[in-house]
Structures are given as structure tokens and as C-alpha cells.
Image (cartoon, rainbow, N blue to C red; front, side, top):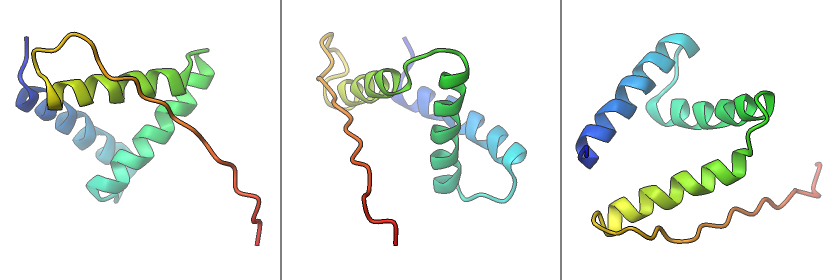
Length: 86
């Protein structure tokens, strides 16, 4: 099993590659853009993006709080559409 540091390093390599593809983005901008683009990918491939996103967040949280745990916390994602179009 890999460590959190090893997982973070793999993610960094992916982000470095993505930043090369996407252009002049800060690390934070690249994370945001990539997360949004993964949503588009999920739509195109009939994957349930919010379910997968919540599941990933749940696994991340478990790894951060209880690395030996087996039951990840429940994560709920709610989107509130803005009614202000000004």
C-alpha cells in the first residue's frame, strides 16, 4: 500500500503534466480546472461525477484522519444554483 506522500507525488506528476497541456496556470488554478474537466469527462463517458467526487473526498478524508480505517465517512455534495444573474 502506498503512503500519503507517495500518493501526493503521483498527483503532483499528473498536475505537472496537466499544467503543461493547459498552459499558464498556477497549481491551485490547475487543480480547479482539472477537477472541472474531469466532470466533463464523466459526462462524456456516462460516469456519475458527483458520486465519484464525493467518494474520492471520502477516501481522502479517511486517509487523513484514520489511515488504518476501513469505513470512510459519508460525504454529501450539494449544488445551490445562483438565482442572481446580475
